[in-house]
Image 1 (cartoon, rainbow, N blue to C red):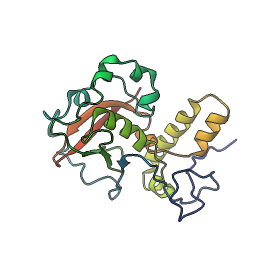
Image 2: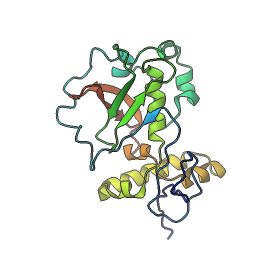
Image 3: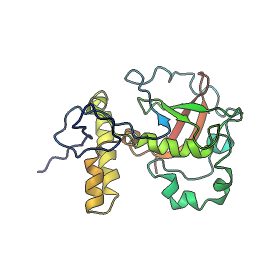
Image 4: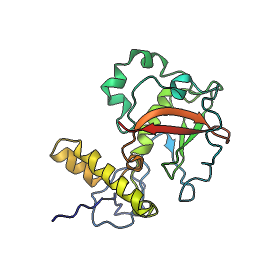
Length: 220
């Protein structure tokens, strides 16, 4: 009986600052590459960020948050690049508001947390001098595409490791058999796999920390 093992992206040159993933070798604790995107992901202490407290959902919808992000009416799967997702591209109502401010105060960055993720996601403005809806949607996808270090995976419980591994296999197996699936599996576990398949964006809600927002997901 064959044994399935999850993979982790490996950097064969620890001092390299390139954003290109190397071909994977044996599973060893690798260096995490930081792709050149306008998103930063500071890693808080494990098991999860202390920012995620019982008061995190004190306010269901913050009045200053754009309603499209507080109560989205569009179908956004964070595992799929919104720029290449036909469902997103063909949504004309969403297209009209993509460049509107994510928050009414026109902030230059915002932080997103989730009880499912042991990282905070910091999204910064790109095209405009303020964070837009487009920045949030594209930034979420790019942040969750970052590879996971083996030690990060091993800090999770046995049950959670099983759910993450299953999500990794399902994600790879959604691709047609062949080179594309092989390359994706070689890239290893991604942060999106920590969502265990619950990748549908259900909106942001205010937390008790200034300019920090909690994200909600659901399964397909």
